[in-house]
Structure formats: structure tokens, C-alpha cells
Image 1 (cartoon, helix red, strand yellow):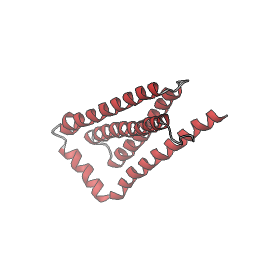
Image 2 (image 1 turned 180 degrees about the horizontal axis):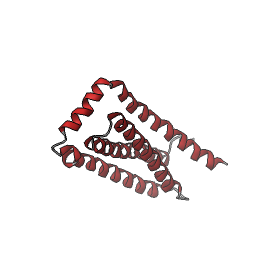
Image 3 (image 1 turned 90 degrees about the vertical axis):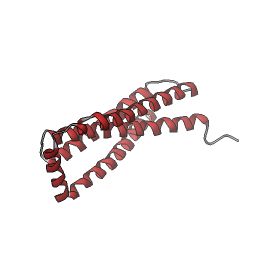
Image 4 (image 1 turned 30 degrees about the vertical axis):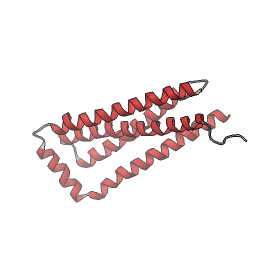
Length: 159
């Protein structure tokens, strides 16, 4: 009897899982930097939120396409190749995690002298807290876009 799930299938699942984690974390990190840059430059809080979400969604979509291009560029997938891709994805994922921690410690948020800008932004959020729902909407949009991109790639290969 044939196995329904082979080791290679599991390796593909790991590649897919770490790909989506990496793209989501990278998009969040760039969105966080954008968000704080707009706050300290005293931009309109609504514009700050919208810009952060647009940047985050754009980085997510671009990074998904880049990872898909790198993965689908390979003609043959053997276990050794998949394991190498997993190691690279995990390594890059942890590098992004370390950069996020370092950014939170030494980044823009650690600068002093921006209390007025942060206070203005915080007051706007308190008065318009429903705007923050957009963050969760963008997260779900990322997942939907990811699904459409994967479906599009799989349909292209079927033709």
C-alpha cells in the first residue's frame, strides 16, 4: 500500500509554512518601521495607519512572489534540495526576528524627544480606535492574497 504522505510532502509543508511565516514577519517589520517613521515625522495619524498597512501588504505580496520564484525556479525537487531550502528559510526567518528585537531596542522608538508626536498619535487612536480594525483586515487580506497567488501558480503549472 502506498503512503499517502511521504517525507517529501512533509518537507514541502515545512517550506510552505516557513515561507508564509517569513513573509508575514518581514512585512510586519517593514510596516513597523514605516509606522514609527511617520509618527516621528508628525504625519497625520490616519495617514500613518493607512501607509503602514499599504506598505505591509505590498512587502508581503512582493516577498511571496520572490519566494515563489526562487522555489519554482528549481526543476527537480529532491529531499536534499528541500532540506537546504528549509535551512535557508529558517535562517532568514531568525535573522528577521533578531533584527526586530534589535530594532525595538535601538531603533526609532528608543530615540528621545518625540513625546509630542507619540502623544498626538496616541490621542488620535484613543478617539478613533475603530481604525485599528484595519490592521486585522490587512492581515486577513495577506492570507487571502497568499492563497490566490498559490492557486494562480498551481493553475499555471496544470496547463
